[in-house]
Length: 165
Image 1 (cartoon, helix red, strand yellow):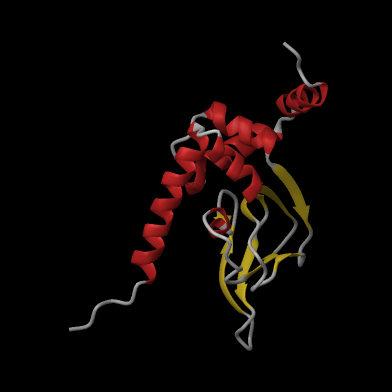
Image 2: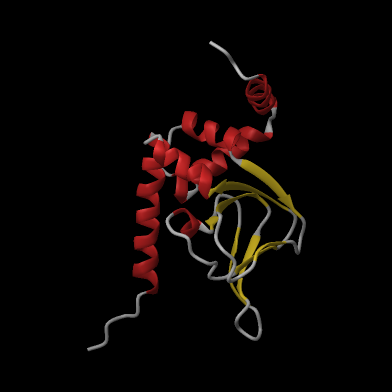
């Protein structure tokens, strides 16, 4: 059996990094990855892209095409509606929160902008990676799809206008 040296090096680098255990806990607390065992979460932490953002960095703009979902590992991210004259802040997300999840289920544009509120580290799952998971019919993609359905259901119930008599 042939092992790719790059993958082996990445795995051992990851395994020896003490911050990875805290990232594993953060990922397990994320609703997007609820119910996944530690082995699958470790694989995601190895496979997915970590990116550092400085305070004020724009992660994406409202109206852009959605190409990834993000999980906050460190720091915080402000979600704001730029189409409002005052750039209204919708929410501020901290560690274990995710955003941009609609990119995984459809080719949609971003509903709002995302800006690093302070220095932050985000874990990024691109739609191409997720599409590959689905093609492999992996347990990971099945669990993420179930979690997405639950998250979408919560959004609908939370933001659905109350029926008036």
